[in-house]
Amino acid sequence: MIKYRKGYKYQLTEDYVCKTYIAPCKDGCADTGYLHLDPIDERLTIKRGYAWDGPSGPTIDTKNSMCGSLEHDAKYQLMRLGLIDRGYMKLVDAEFKKTLREDGMSRFRSWIWVWALGTPFGTKARPSEERLILSAP
Image (cartoon, rainbow, N blue to C red; front, side, top):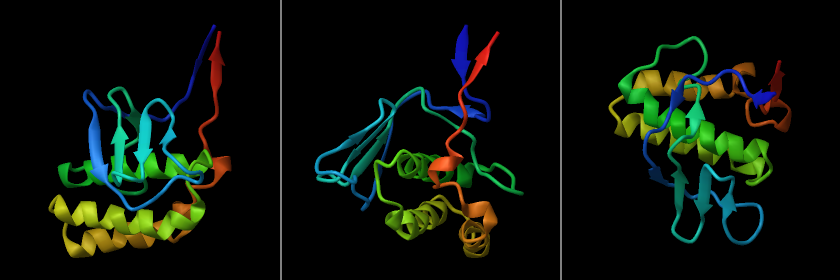
C-alpha cells in the first residue's frame, strides 16, 4: 500500500532560500524535513524535492509568479501545521507581493493576487486545509 497526497504540479530540483521576517511559534527553528525556518538568520529554506501546486486560483502560471507561489505555499503550510502563528498571515501575504514585484510582475496583477488572498479563495492557512492523505490500493 502507498500513502500520497493529490494536487501538486511542481517539485524543486534544488534547495531554495528566501529572506523572511516570520518566526516559528516556539523558540528555535521550525523544520518539517522539506521546510526549515531559521528566525535568527531570517531565512526559509525550501529543500529539494518539495512539491507545491504553483499559483492558485483563476490565474496562469508564469515565470514571474513561480518563486512567489513557492514561498507563499511553504509559509501557509507552516501555518496549517501550527509551526508559525496565523497572526503572520498579513506579513506572509506582504512578502508574497514583494517577491512577485521583484520577479517582474506588474503592480496591478500583484495587487489582484494579494487582494484575492483576502477573499474566500484565501483561506488556505487554516489547519483544515491541509491536504488529505490518501492510500492505494
